[in-house]
Amino acid sequence: MSELNTSPEAPRSAPEAPRQGPGPDVPARPKGEPRFPDGPQADPAGSHFERRIRSFQPRRSRVTTGQADALQRLWSRWGLDIDGQRVVDLGEMFGNGNPVVLEIGFGMGEATAQMAAADPDTNVLGVDVHTPGQGNLLNLADHHGLSNVRVANGDAIILLREMLAPDSLAGLRVYFPDPWPKKRHHKRRLIQPEFLDLAATRLRPGAVVHCATDWEPYAEQMLDVLDAHPDFENTRAEGGFSPRPAFRPVTRFEGQGLDKGHVVNDLLFRRVQHREPQEQRPL
Image (cartoon, rainbow, N blue to C red; front, side, top):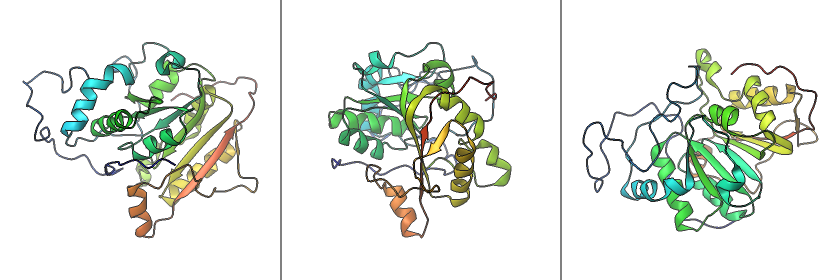
């Protein structure tokens, strides 16, 4: 795997921090003007779609000068605002017909960039709502010449449901999603039967869903939900969790958890051949 000089990851599920100003070299903007005029929109889908329980919450944190520069320079070429208004031609987006893997929640983009560098024949579309992470991944892709990386801003559910064609994805990655540990918040967890219903329509047969988490109760839920879903089968013949595959790098965040005794579980499930279409559960 290519070694990339990457910056530290942002905390995964820390509470929303107080609003902060721009980095030391980023000039203040007049009130009412967008944060990055040529960058990602604050709320790309707006009020076009119904409100629902979301599996994520935006975090506010400082954007460095380098991240801001990357957002301004590269967003028009490598960025996608998830507005839900059109179906995206992935071949046109990447400029080739290589398989596309969707990564939901890439944090600061360290692992995403390393995996893209190690597998240049696979395109990676990363989705997140964390502006510093979006800028950091664009900066890493630019610095290391990773032409197979694109960054999407907004709600991954709207992207899957409204903007991606059936059978358009060769894989789905969900690494260290917010575990929503309190019982009353479990309904906010991303990996649920209705999410898999939707994902299955966009994943071609043979595509692999790869999840990883250091929250053991969530790992058990993921395993139960994936095991029970008729559109997916465990790639591990004996069932259960998979060893961490060599292609998934250990991030700094993950390493800190391992140092504290956290147990990290990987799940790799394959999309099976299509069945007769059934009514999809609402998201």
